[in-house]
Amino acid sequence: MSYQGHCNCESIRVTLPQQPPTSVVCHCDCCKRAGGGAFSINYLVNENELTVDDPNATLKIYVYKNSFSGNTVKRHFCSSCGSPVFTESPNVPGKVFLKAALFDRVSPPADEVFVNKKYQWVTLEQTGEKQA
View 1 (spheres, rainbow, N blue to C red):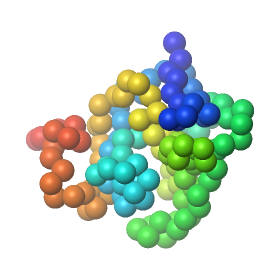
View 2: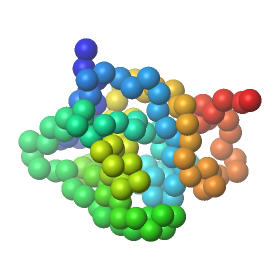
View 3: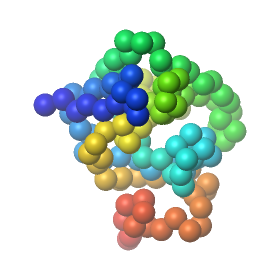
View 4: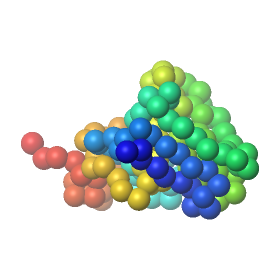
């Protein structure tokens, strides 16, 4: 059974063959600003498994240089409602960071990235991080 999600205005719909078993918490500044929170929750998926339905051509791309790696990153977002959709990074060729919030059901996080950017008040319970 396919796993389907959409942006806030439903102009953009995304489909994966199935729900990923886990997600990734990102604490980078760009994810925090784009998502309006302390972190974002993403699925790292193969680009060729993602289907994006955008009949009104509202999907736009914001290109920027990542201050951590210096690489050029592409953030895809809905130009109608502003919802982040997915991010392409040369650090993970052939994969995209798909925003898990597009889906009604979200898999628990198994990993965190950019933990050096994590706000000190973000607790283990909020991110799903496992204690050793």
